[in-house]
Length: 112
Image 1 (cartoon, rainbow, N blue to C red):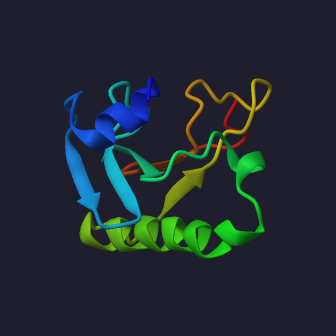
Image 2: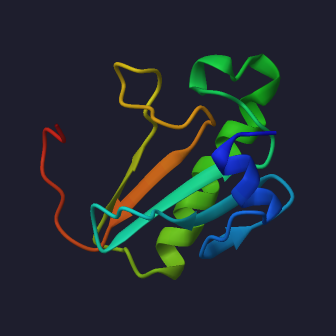
C-alpha cells in the first residue's frame, strides 16, 4: 500500500516507535507542536474517522486507551490533548486515521 503511515507500520519508513500492539502503533510526529507530539494509528488502514464503520467501535476505543496509557507512562498527569483531524477542512493531511497526542506544556484554546 502506498499510504505513508502503512509504510511506517510495516517498517519500510523508519519512525521512532513509542507503543505498539496487534491493533495500534504510536510514533513521534516528525513536526512536533509540543514537547510530546505523538501519532497513534490503527495497524489496519482506515482512511479517516468518517470511514470507521460500526464494527470499528472497539478499535476506536482502543486507540483512546493507548493514548491514556502513553500519557501515564510519559508523565503527562497535568494534562494532554488528543485530536483527530478528519477531512480536508478538518486539517487531515495523511489519509490514514490517526490521533495526535500533544502534551508536555500548557496548551491554548482555540487550537487554530
